Length: 158
Image (cartoon, rainbow, N blue to C red; front, side, top):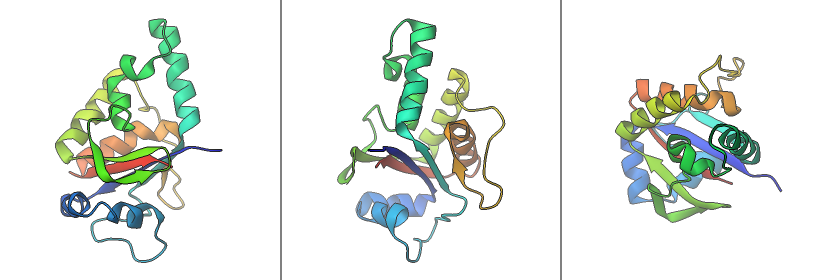
């Protein structure tokens, strides 16, 4: 069974709506109808195979720190993937745990933290045909773009 990390850049107004009604998260990620205001699925989504991300992070942690506990070694990566549990959304569950949200200030801090930890700031492999961010290499650029745009992020693992 696969595990997929899903992230979406959203406007502050949509963040407030999501916090008031967590069921809107399902509309952002899984509804084929009209996208909520403040969200453009073509350019505001990130996806990656969570098992691959986990394997890369574990391998790097073992090499650099002598432990596979990547969530402790790389707290910014843990925050970027919702693994630290500090920003969980009560009332909405993905297949593998709760949704999480980061406000624009937290997004900016995570973007800087990811850069400091050396995650995903090589040339992005963004699909120029549809503008989608996909793959581990795009995680840092996705967060950096969200920070530049003053956006919040909502996500989880399905």
